[in-house]
Image 1 (tube, helix red, strand yellow):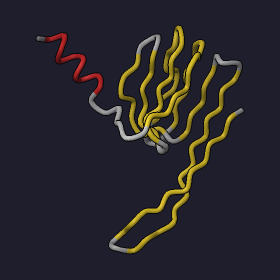
Image 2 (tube, helix red, strand yellow; image 1 turned 90 degrees about the horizontal axis):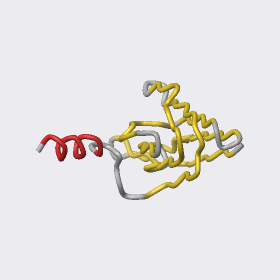
Image 3 (cartoon, helix red, strand yellow; image 1 turned 60 degrees about the vertical axis):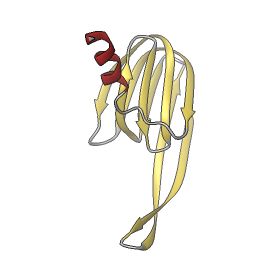
Length: 107
């Protein structure tokens, strides 16, 4: 099991508020992933799932991947399939990835 935690400083009305932002990632036998802290699903197919999370953009890569549970109100996600790679990238957003691909197909 892998647990990831992050502290973030949030500014409200010019006043700093220390608020703990937690991300929990549980990977079982590289076949089942439970994730808390999901903000948005950028794109997904059987080989790659791209997520905006509280800790940055997360790329999940593998084989036969499918999202078995998604609740963006609670920020939770469950993935089934064989997971090869979990990779965080800074400074990018997963938002709009699927729309760009769709617009290229429609041209």
